[in-house]
Image (tube, rainbow, N blue to C red; front, side, top):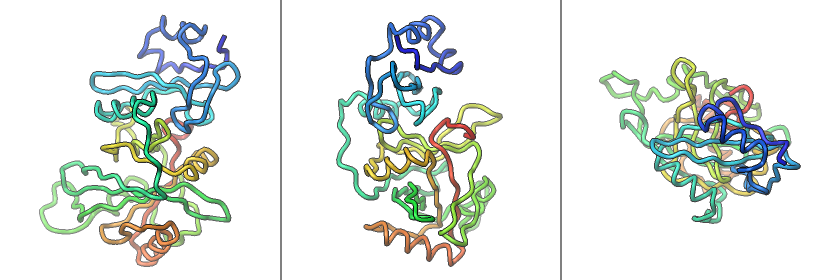
Length: 270
């Protein structure tokens, strides 16, 4: 009997009381699972386990995760993204070997540019922190503006990102934002929904972004991801993490870097 399974009120409302009760008494709960976040094995009879419901436009998929990785929650994703998560969760489409850093483009609302995201580890205070570096492929103008210009950083500062003067300092937490890992891969960066609604994707991968085992181990330890953002042309595609750090240092020195710290999707403070 899986006494350590958690079904949140939000998940219960989506799947119904009958199904939720069957999970809690062990009828529909798995005997074991691969955590949808860290991809390591879990046992609902001995590990505190969260039910995580991924909801698309037409499909909903129930997954399981260590409660220390992600709390029980409902996560809204696109139907295309959900199908990719299903393949990753079920193992029908094994993830390729994860590079030290990768890039996954996403259209910015309004189609003004594409956001590239690179994953890497950043050393701060003698500890490795999982980081994502965001850089558009073109200048991003403020919605409704007509002239040329790049308002990417001012727009993010208005959302709560903080200018970085020293990359040796940990970025401050940004309430309401979070990073979604599913199947051990990066799927989205979420921002607060309108009027307290469900979080929505600020950035969402067209295809789940693989991360290294070291990156995944670091995020499982810290339970937070550092997000750095810079205007187009400030960082570039760096083949090594030491070069990525150098690029971050140069962007910070030039006043072209903002950052925030955010938890995995749905963790306290999100």
